[in-house]
Amino acid sequence: MDPMNAKARVENLSAEIAVKYGVKGSLEKQVRKIGRAFPKYERKQAQILVHASHALGHPKMQKQLDERSFERAETALLMHLEKVDAMDRRKGIALDLTTTVLVNVVLAVIILATLWAWLKT
Image (cartoon, rainbow, N blue to C red):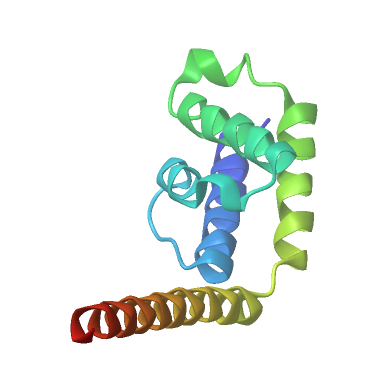
């Protein structure tokens, strides 16, 4: 496996993750930050790539890398990232936040109305 080519592929994947999930940094930091937003299989494949990116910096460890597992992990993550719609993710996060705030406001109003009615009598 050509280490320069592999580093470029890892950087390309990292850039794609930054676009889709809005998380910047190294691949390791991105995978850690995204956490469970990745399905279980993709998280495992991402860990394989993180391990490979560490190994690419050491000449003796480069020889131990399995090219097939590297390519399989890269392909799996790229296929997953193609399915991710960044705008839909952002819309879902905004709706979740809005719903949480709205429910909390409604509950606070109900509690205050109940407390006011109880103290009035």
